[in-house]
Image 1 (spheres, rainbow, N blue to C red):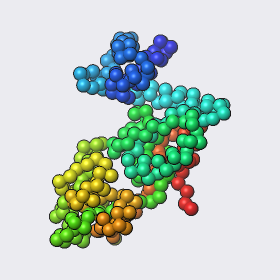
Image 2: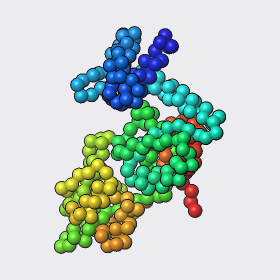
Image 3: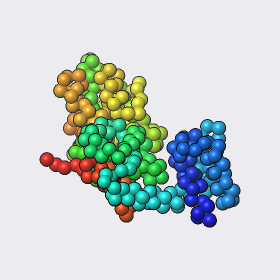
Image 4: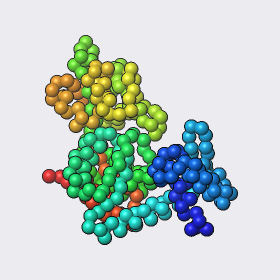
Length: 298
């Protein structure tokens, strides 16, 4: 039974991960019709519908989701074990998939990859940039990158960046003729550029802290984006105030293009961490990347 189902299970997991027969077929190197036939044959043997198919999307049924949760990690462990065999080769090899926000890519991942990838030509890195707090194991990622305080329980976390904080900034043109906010409670009186968080479908509440007082402020304005660099542009364009990472704002503050308000309300947070499931043995390629990314205080 297992021998008959193994390849079919891999086909099903690929479709479930991609949420598309077309994309999964491309990844597996088979035709869409052959892949559809394989999954239907698996469903027939199990006597269960595993996927809900519409003209626009594919999603797991309750039975399909249970199968993903049960066998998905086992196949992932097999892939890790096979990848670990690369240590028997002269050079480490393999593909590593990482989920991260765009700012983490630019701040910590990209500088390391510039020196890491030329040293290990048989290792490939795929980075998916979004603000969704995905289940990295279920979505087929080897690791994710988030601020230390946002790392999910049960994950191994390795610090890969310095402490950071968010700053409220605006352009001189925006502040002209306006009273500057002196506390976060003043922000509803200002135009503020919002960040959309896909995971919850809502807008990010700006987080402040001072003298043991914590405030989460819902702001509003004319602009909503889903990335930090777009919020930087919105502030530079004079659309209103943006809440962005300090390192991103720093050069524009130094040049006078942006000005900071409420700085005493902007606390420092643990920097970016690489997090990943607690598997028994990481592949040599992944272990090398973790070590290369590890944050070290000079």
